[in-house]
Image (cartoon, rainbow, N blue to C red; front, side, top):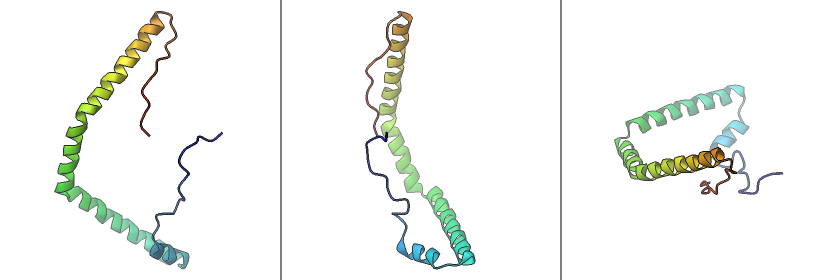
Length: 103
């Protein structure tokens, strides 16, 4: 039985039509050349991402802003695990209501 939830996205829904047409109409050599170009473009993209100082600064700011939440989450998980451990040592059923994980 499948889990209810969001419908599965079509695999190539985000593919641009120009590239799709190029591949659909290409022979093996043209397709391989297109893949090489994509690989080079992605390499350039990754290099630009590494060199982006603004992005690096914003990532660090986001990391620092979220540290308090992450620390609280870690502490809460350890607290629940300890409570379960103690209940098990007492011979009690260790089912504890836990906070729902974000999807």
